[in-house]
Image: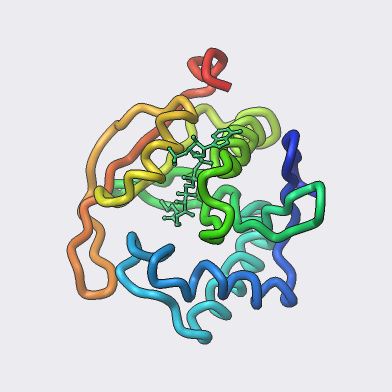
Length: 176
Ligand SMILES: CC(C)(COP(=O)(O)OP(=O)(O)OC[C@H]1O[C@@H](n2cnc3c(N)ncnc32)[C@H](O)[C@@H]1OP(=O)(O)O)[C@@H](O)C(=O)NCCC(=O)NCCS
């Protein structure tokens, strides 16, 4: 286990989770902010990237598991990214559609923030979100973040405006 909340815990992804990753990454509705649903080879590359992150960075996107029945509900974790050229650490969350609207994403995101501040001792943590992804922005806002800037990301042949949300360790207490 990496961290836990009242209803959930995270653990590293394992190869047998790929079938679960497919449920989100190959779901065109869940992936609207990425402009396309992944193909099987892209899901495998995604999984391998997380394993590489665990080894290189000590963190990545982890499996998000519901305690009551060990159900895989999605992924949440921390990844190294850049925002307008500067290195940042981002809280990421992707849930299978069956598990949206239960408050699981914000519950996990708050715990990921706490992990970033207490275990990794980061001063600031980010969520970088495409401008059409209102559900994700609401998670960032509930997680105590403010919008800090904008960047146009070039992905899948498209220009995608993204907002950079962030929260600082010394300002997060009232929102955690
Ligand atoms: C972004 C994403 C994780 C948000 O999931 P979510 O379930 O909407 O987020 P939350 O956990 O904050 O849940 C909030 C909803 O649960 C409801 N809820 C129910 N029980 C709750 C509880 N105990 N606590 C909090 N909220 C609760 C809230 O009322 C809210 O409902 P609403 O969406 O109808 O307003 C999800 O849309 C997703 O996986 N999208 C695809 C991947 C993606 O784009 N990821 C982000 C990339 S930047």
